[in-house]
Amino acid sequence: MTSTATETKTVVVEREIPHPPAKIWRAITTPHLIEEWLMKNDFAPKLDHHFKLSGDWGHADCKVLKIEPDCLLSYTWDAMGLKSVVTLTLTPKGSGTHLRVEQAGFPKEAARAWAGAQYGWTSFLEKLEQVSARA
Amino acid sequence: MPQTHDALFRSLADPTRRAIFERLCRKGEQTVGALTGHAGVSQPAVSKHLAQLKRAGLVRDRQDGRQTHYAAQIAALAPLIDWTSQMTGFWESKFDALENLLKRMDQ
Image (cartoon, each protein chain N blue to C red):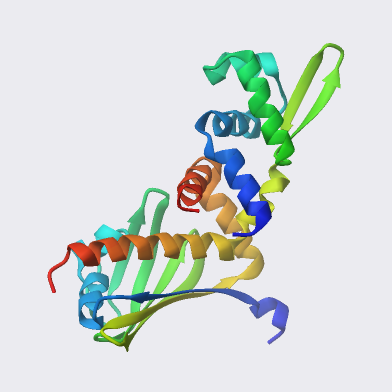
């Protein structure tokens, strides 16, 4: 395998959250709770379960890859013909949790095209406003 | 947040200014007069917004007789279109929403 063909991008976001892993696990595996923080979905906490995450920009086709209660949830994330894998990891930290999400697997060049096409200028600029309001 | 992002965010945070920039992205080069017809604000206000967009590198101007034509410089947004920063921002905002949800949930 050549490095250019397989070069991919990975995004990692980590946060200390003052809630125990079991509670966060409920929020990331219960459909009506997932909808409240992530997207509309038909998720089920079952290995190989196919589900859809729907946002205003379109949807991602997903499949559960790994499920370890209160610890780890991993699923595929295919959107606009590009595949990636999302992995959420929960680690107890004091009375709270260290939450980590990793999204990996987009080919580098395709990812750039995807980001531009998917968001379009309008929704992209709306997002900018939200980000700038937080900055 | 890097400095260049700050300037871009500030320039695009104003809805009127953003609408002007979006129109230039969609329609290509425009005169101040043409932009004023759609902006819903006075021509001097449009000129002021254009000057700010120009300072941020988001538009360039071209003099043609008495008319000044403005065009979007989409390349200026390149640092923001990077997939990594996009998805990082996506997950950061989702984690914010998750934390809000956790506060509302029972133990």
